[in-house]
Picture 1 (cartoon, rainbow, N blue to C red):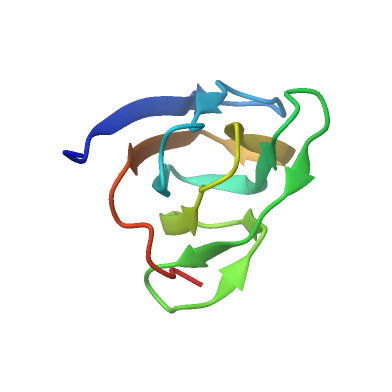
Picture 2: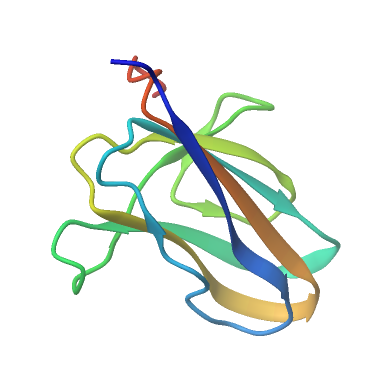
Length: 114
């Protein structure tokens, strides 16, 4: 099977709390999210298999190797999505600024990220 990929903007210059755009990852293996902007807020990485109940998932900060379910600063955050149906980058806390989250997912690269 030839690997394939998709990209999506999950949050676009967001200036409030909110779920953002859901990324369908049911046929994908790995996901990288790039959080950008000058902001004071929290992005919570969440996933679902039933499209109703959302659970926080760990993503690895590719700058320092730490794993967390949230991001409070710009950076690249990677996670495996094998077995998941959808992922979102929910802005769970917001004080000021603008938050954008761009995502790239691939069917290849199912190796361990965490």
